[in-house]
Amino acid sequence: MTFAAFLLRRFAAAALLVGVVSVSAFTITRLAPGDATAELFASGADRATIAAARARWGLDQPFPAQLGGWIAGIAHFDLGRSSSYDRPVAPIVLERAANTAILAGAALALATLIGLPIGVLTGARPRGWLAAVVTPLSIALVACPPIVGALVLLLLVVTGWLPVSTSSLWVPALAIALPLAATLERLQSQATADAMASTDITAAAARGVPASRLLWIHTTRQSLGPVLGVYGVMIGALFSGSLAVEIVTSWPGLGSLLYSALRGRDVFLVAGCALFGALCLAAGNLIADVARAIVDPRVR
Image (cartoon, rainbow, N blue to C red; front, side, top):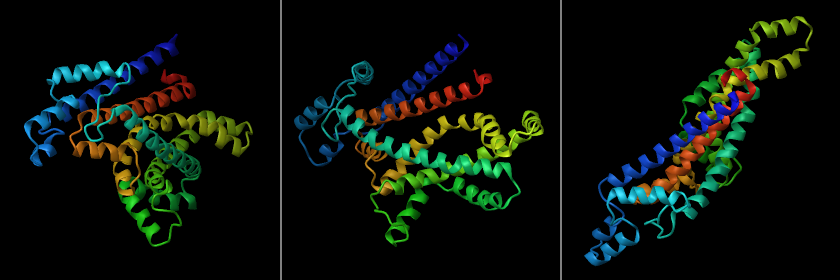
């Protein structure tokens, strides 16, 4: 019952997050000066053409009616019509969301495979040579914005130092993954050092538990709690970091779609992108919370 109540609370928080983010994006974009017919007006189109375009894109309705209709349409996956593409928003966002999911999944997998094992090793021997090399490098990568990493990687590709294509998945994935891997390494290193100083690990060592088992099973499991707590935040970092990286590397994901939608004052497309971004962030937080609750029952 305690775990069920914990899940219900987390589901409620996730639903509230999705609702607030998507409605706020719709409201801010709708109330901003200008709309999708600004280009038609600038090109000298007559009033009848502009009025027909506003009616086709649903811009002729008052704001409360627009917002209410959009919220009601979510129930049957109708997110309105894009003024930029003159198509329903849902299939456009789904297509781009799949590309962003591929990029985010690859970046998170790389960050986890690089950051966690190195963090365990540097935390186990904080005065060793590996920690002396990795620590300043991790601090530099944590301070480096993903867009800077993307530009550096593109430079290496153009000059031939990195043997991949400029349109390859590896360029944006590495640009996003390296700062995340550095963050995970710092967190895991500190958590490992704290876990190794605990009395239960000391007692296990005194009972003759092999050093490798002590480090990679007992210590790692105990130190995973604080690290899993930031995975939900990292999902948000994946989405926000991919916005600039996708534009710089021409990756056809939600980031570049959201940017073009904002430039074109495409209200429904902006709201659809924000909705899917909020769903990713909420799902990431929910998965991280559940994983922490499984690893450490004290969380729930």
